[in-house]
Image (cartoon, rainbow, N blue to C red):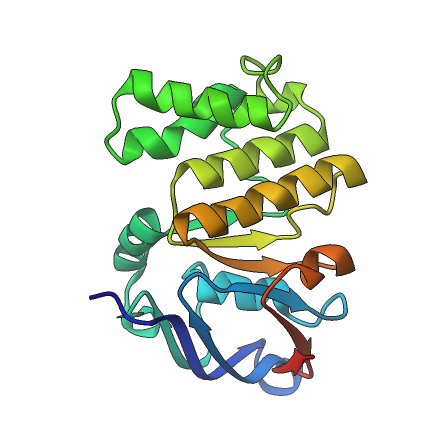
Length: 228
């Protein structure tokens, strides 16, 4: 039976630099996230939200503390073990999109399903449906360099959705989009949560997006404060 809590964080600290140049980013984060919860991480620019998101997803290391993801101790794993865990359980949408430049939009979105072992016809149909839902049906064969920033962001989101993750981490998922497209992305995020029980952890400066989440956690002086 899966653990009730999909993420548990205790005494998490993160510093960069050494000696007089040392800078504390996270000073003692405590966090418990239940399965299928939706969480908005909010706070001032530079407060450490993206750093915290990367540590929760196993993409970065804390300086101290414990991070459990789907019942596994990220803080004790090497990079190879964490990569396997990410491939099985999580999706991540980066601010910089991280699309593969030599693959077109359809191929980028199809990739997670192929890696998961789906047959190419099935994986391509699912990727095409997601891109059409996001208004990119006429851009399927375009390379990332041929797409606008907003279009690249939608491709990155579709790719994350197509991995069918248990946990989806997204760093400013509507940040480069106009309001209409941003609302469509938000609807897709929360439909993923409702229909598949996907846990959502979102970094956002968008009050409307944050308000749709179950909880809003503000990062202040390296620690999380729950907003009511």
